[in-house]
Amino acid sequence: MDSRPDRTLLTAGLEDAARHAALQPDGPGLAAVAPTVDASDTHGPAHRVDRVYTADFLLPAVVHAEVVDMKDLSDHHTVVVTYDLDAVIEIYLDRFGPAA
Image 1 (cartoon, rainbow, N blue to C red):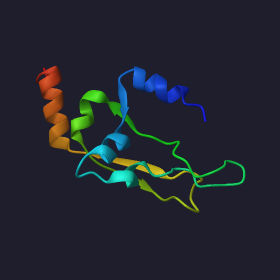
Image 2: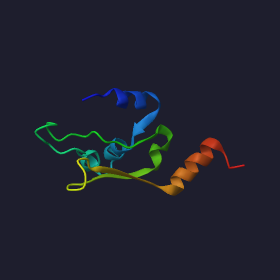
Image 3: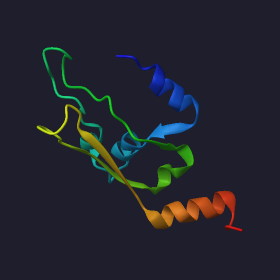
Image 4: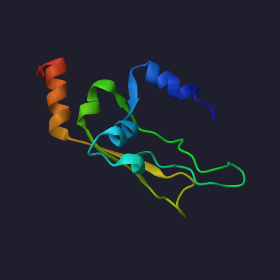
């Protein structure tokens, strides 16, 4: 699997939001980083190829992540990340100041 795009995004200061959620003490655990492609004869074992990247400074606002099974609709499952809107607003105000 080509990991260069992932390394490029991480180098740019983006982070894998689901991985962050999975590592939180009260987070969803491994369910947040479940495979997003099922096992198949043509693609090998089930693996995680889909991610949601977020700016590193927004990680404190990530409250949940999950992989939604899209069987019979797509060959990839959907990653859903939930942010605390109040936390996002507070982070932006602290980082960039009030809107002009």
